[in-house]
Structure formats: structure tokens, C-alpha cells
Image 1 (cartoon, one colour):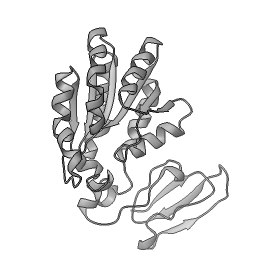
Image 2 (image 1 turned 120 degrees about the vertical axis):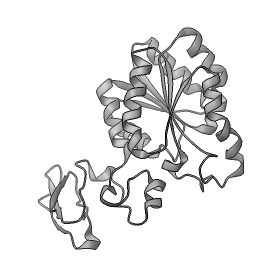
Image 3 (image 1 turned 90 degrees about the horizontal axis):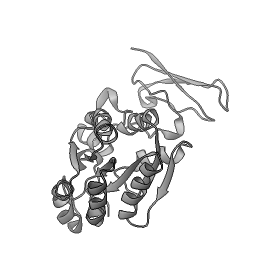
Image 4 (image 1 turned 90 degrees about the vertical axis):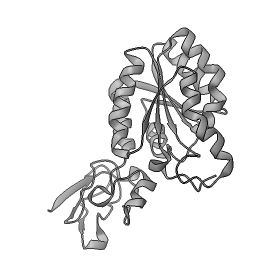
Length: 241
């Protein structure tokens, strides 16, 4: 099947070039660059936000958050970011994290979202609470190791019944190689649940966008604290420090 992909920017990426795909550039700036290939379907989104196609085994697909074979260019983060825009997420609090890097990158590039880099994770709980008090919606992005720093702050969320939504990328879980990531990684879900946070865990990248949609409804419409936990099987962060 032959398909066309459109991207905007000063450059054109050659989709499926190693399989003989042909590329034709029609200009620069915001004029479209069209690439035609008989191998893969590319998403309609800025080239600067795309990563190279992941060629290889199914295992490599899990390690990058992408799907294998014909869905190699797909990643869950753009769909989640689009949902943030649709429901009016206007603040993102985060500590830099490899498992959520693509989503953080999209939030940072979005002028409608105020992204704040934290010095420690518990500041994120306070920021999201303050956003709600000010009539805004926020998302807290953290690695599992940072959950331990937030336990006492979660008491404010529970006692004041503040709608709270977080996304947690797991460590110490699937194929971990860094020993000090294991203890908190194994305790993350139990710690969140003990603090009154509803936990929903994604093991397949295809689950993430739908799970985030359901979790944000539970958080913002039902007034609950909810965390979507992204399995290390999806993020493939086992060999990072």
C-alpha cells in the first residue's frame, strides 16, 4: 500500500528510506514537504518531534515505547499530549525522567502548558494542588523513585479532596539493572494506594492513551487522586542511572 505523509519544517525525513522510499521536497518554512513510501505510514506531526524509525525486533518496540512492525513510528506520548490539550491541562510539574521524556518534551514545547522543572518531587504535589485552587488543571510527571518523596504531601490531597492526576514511569520492575532503583520500585504501587491514590497500571503502550483519558475523568470529574503507572516494560529504562 502506498501512502503519503506530510510534515512541516525546513527538512523532510525519508520514511522507510532503507526500503526504497522516495522523497520529494516542495519548499521550506511552513510549506508542506511530502514523502511517499510503500513501506510505512508516518504520522501527521512536526518532524522535529519525530524519532527515527525503530527497525528490529518486537523487544526493541517495548524498549522505545513504540509498537513493532507496521506501527514503528507510533508512540503513546503525542496522543496523551493531545488529550491534555483537549481537557485543558495548563500546568505540568516534573523532574526530568527518561521514561516520560517524550511527553515532557511535548509539554515544554506547548505554549498553552506552563511546564515547571522541580527541585524535588513533593513540590509537584503542591503545584498541582495550587493549580486546582486557582481554577486550573495540572499533571504531575515523575519517576517511581520520586513517589517516596511525596507520601506526606499526599495527605493534603486526601484531606482536602483535591483532584490530582499523575503519571509515573516505573523503575526497579522489568529488567532493572540498577540495584538502588529496586526497593522503591517494588513499593511504588503499594505506597500510592496506602496514601489514597487510585493506581492504574499500563503494561502495553497501546493501553496508555485510553487509560490516561479514563484516569483524568476519574480525577477531575469525580474529584479523586489518580496515578497512571507506565510499566518499565514500555519505557525500557532498565539500564539508565
